[in-house]
Length: 67
Image 1: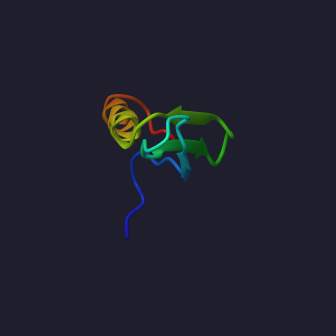
Image 2 (image 1 turned 45 degrees about the vertical axis):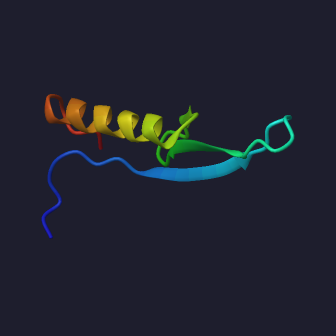
């Protein structure tokens, strides 16, 4: 396998948060932690996390490699 181009390594965390309203479903939350820098990014939805990753991928296509 050829290892060229940008590379990022993230630790993915997901958890449920209960609401204070009875009968309301729990809400899923997500975070990514950059394995090299420790920088954390927290998201209120899976769609937000995916959008962040897509932005990173698009940005890496137009700049120097991330790693």
